[in-house]
Length: 388
Ligand SMILES: [Zn+2]
Ligand SMILES: [Zn+2]
Image (tube, rainbow, N blue to C red):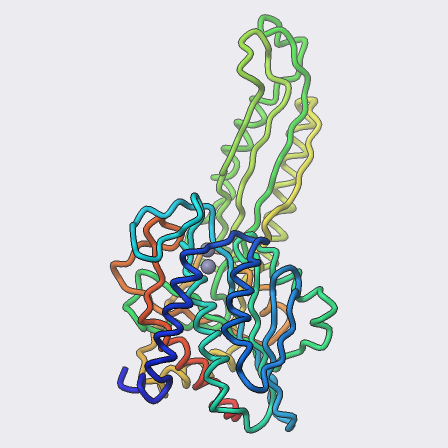
């Protein structure tokens, strides 16, 4: 990374590390990113020409740089929320909030975009416009939609949108790109089965959901085709189940089964959801149960536009970074899918080290070495599109 010194100066890098450590020490879960947003806004506000649009879809905000000269409109997006996970490593900037930590590295993603903003101070745009999108509530899949539905984003129609996610398991600084699907379509299905309790000695007078639940738990495996190379890749995972009460004289009259469903495409998800819900209904009817279903935590697939991926590959090469193209998409859900569903764009990965703990692990910490790397790619993207 010989380009580090010319990209951002040492003083700014130190400030960015301090910012990242502050965010890490004060993590806030989805929907509560008040202090996080305030810290980022304070950090960016002094930049000349930065138009701040705050409180967008909750604590989300935009930083807009508009040259006033016709040209491409780019959007770079970072997420800000942390997780309900107790940090287990004692570091100088460990989380001060019990049970909450930045185990997905969103502190790093936000710090990178803050760095992009500060760099604009002495590298103004020649043409076009760029919006830095600081998104809340990524982890529950709600933030992107809330922001995009906010009337403050009515004019938001970027030609390209980009985002990154740090990726443990890949070499540090490695740029991970993929055309088409980058991350899975993932959503959660909740099934509620209502029957009738009776004396445990006389189950024949009640309607116990146990047999239906057993069948529906088993059916998850029948629907699953856990082969990522298969375009019809489908995973239905039971995540939670409950039946009756710990009342040993009573035959259960109520049960719940919760699942997450994963596919690569919307078509496959819609078809799977339709068939599975049909099975729930049919089985419940046969047993005399009332079935209700609900959906939660929807993450649309991140669909990477080939032109956007080409721009990232070029940017990575210009920044002197190695690029990897995995054969298969990632099985996790990512709320950036809501952006690629509406606009041309792409997400790329940034390797955070092969022996780094996995994301959402209690000992995870975003590597500070990636701050400059992330800024360099976004900077090269601005150059690629002719904005600087
Ligand atoms: Zn996460
Ligand atoms: Zn994440």
